[in-house]
Amino acid sequence: MSLPHAILTALLEKPSSGLELTRRFDRSIGYFWSATHQQIYRELGKLEKAGHIRALPSVQPTRGQKKEYEVLPAGREELAAWTARPEDPKTVRDPLLLRLRASAVVGGAGMTQELVRHLELHRAQLADYETIEERDFPPERRITHEDRLRHVVLRAGIELETFWTKWLTDTLAELSPGPDRPPSRGDASGRPTS
Image (cartoon, rainbow, N blue to C red; front, side):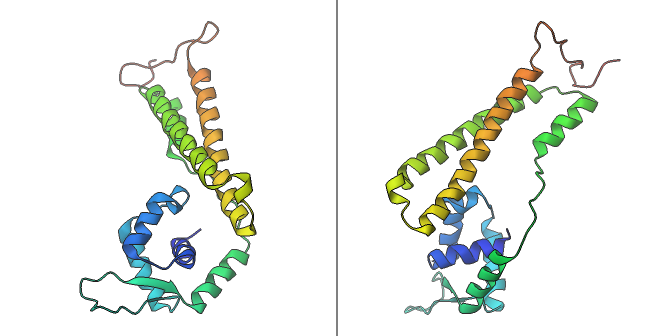
């Protein structure tokens, strides 16, 4: 997904100002596509220049007034074309996985605490998603196709967080010293000892 398409989607759901978009990214869209407010404002300018969106007319002078944007037909067409294009799955690029691999080379001091921290963060995110699902998507409210599409996006988040909590729990168990496992090798700096 690209930021322009995320913005077009959000604006089609509800015309918004840049500030409102930023808040919406923080609350919902940001769960699966994050962007800073600078990136959002920069992209709004590009989308407006490309003729995909326009600022809604304001009844008050625009100086100091926030602009609200709506999607134009060309923007809707671009979003529809983008959703219809095939796209290959993306490779997972999580720095934690690379850091674990690097720890195998240079030692892993502090990695256990980092794994525990990540586990706590993923458990908290999973709880948030489950709360949203219970509140916003009970079975009786999944009536329209659009409702079901929004729900399956949330389910993807729930399944990913479920995966991460299980994987981190299993990884911590695998890496903990046990009666049949030698303790990890490394000095206080985390470098392997010879």
